[in-house]
Image 1: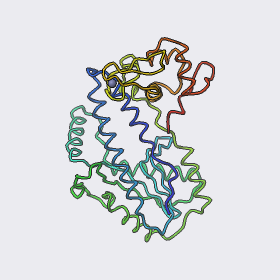
Image 2: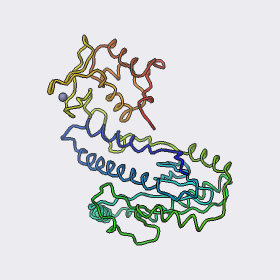
Image 3: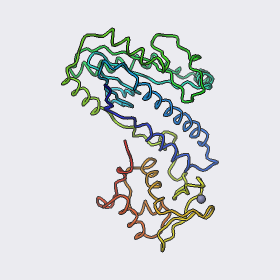
Image 4: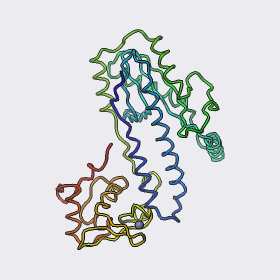
Length: 322
Ligand SMILES: [Zn+2]
């Protein structure tokens, strides 16, 4: 049996980066970085969705509880791609997305680091060992039984045409995604002692969810881009980089390039504001961001999408899904 206790939240980061890419002027000096990272995030998300697919084939003898994208806030932040919790053992999976370019990219990153005499890129196995130890420490600090923890670096490819047999598997803990069900089957044979009761499982699940803190850094902080560098307004869904004009009398949005007409396009712009700036907005901030001059128009728009404000501030949290 498989139960997903925590679903993937990666799309929030991906959506924030997409919003930034659309709002960053084409000649902005950070643009190439943002585009490259957006491409990587898209590939990462596609690769992680393939993990979900293979987890459906786990041998049925055990109840597996799945946690995706956990960021545990302890002494150090522990970021776990996938955690599989059973009564007999725990598995950590660090997904590594193998593309035909990844070796070249990694090599050039390492060279870059060497040239600047800064730290070397941590190897995936070292990273996952460190996470395994931190997780063991968290369990010990919470008086949980010393359950075995296994960790694997899992090679996925976001693209179906990549031959994963070429992936550099130089340890038993580096596995290809298609051998995941077999690896879990071996763990089931090896671990016949039941460490956790159902009550332990419940408290452990609660602990992990309580310790989880979603990504809070805006991409503007990450790339040191100022708000005033961005293009404000409501974008046309057809033209991608043109903004729409508001017709105040007919209450719709119009694109002057493609004649698109829309009613609700401000919702996407307000989501961008939440992803890039902050999770609440005032009437005057919304007027500036949506490029609308009328306070009353904006009042009606915000009320319709977000409900009543708290003081002067409307909460944008209902638009986010993390
Ligand atoms: Zn258009």
